[in-house]
Image (cartoon, rainbow, N blue to C red; front, side):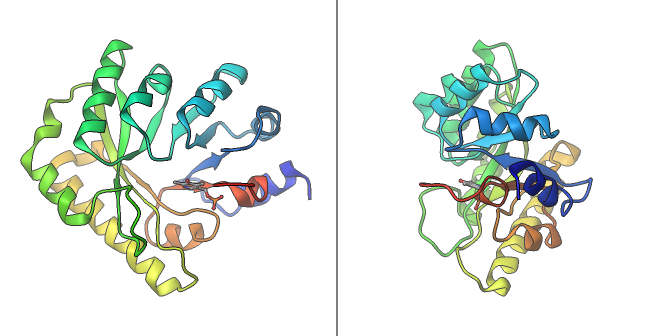
Length: 221
Ligand SMILES: *Cc1c(COP(=O)(O)O)cnc(C)c1O
């Protein structure tokens, strides 16, 4: 199947109310352009410099999302144009995004990354850490960031029970934080990738991040 046919096939599994982020990391601009020409406008990358280079080469109406772990000293590469940063996992990062956004005269939308998977990755807040952080209220001083929702990566397992449990935990946290702090400003639950996006949508995701199912296998992640 051609890339465009494969893209359309994936697209057709996703309802209107769910936003598809086409994860184009490691793929060249020429390949991204084919999917762009088929109608896709939101692309996700996980390396700031790669994201910046592609932004410069490709059409300016692409809405770029940063989905991977972000170091504070690299925020500057993407601050002028990024539409959404999915992977905010510390107060320090939030404060740097805020100041880079201010320098660029804009407000940057972000998601807070929650760590619920069994793997001991360094990305994401544990549920209780995040609860505590939000209750302390330090985030309220950052006027140039807008917290739009939560993002998560589920455990790497074929056990659907485990995965759907993790997604449901994040959906419950989303409701809790929206009620408590953010109201209707908080409207995005980013969860689900190639292997688990159908489960994620069943569990309340309204944004999915799909790479290899559209573009084919990557050489590295
Ligand atoms: C690479 C990546 C994806 C997409 O992964 P696929 O399995 O290729 O769909 C989604 N989210 C994050 C955070 C990623 O790093």
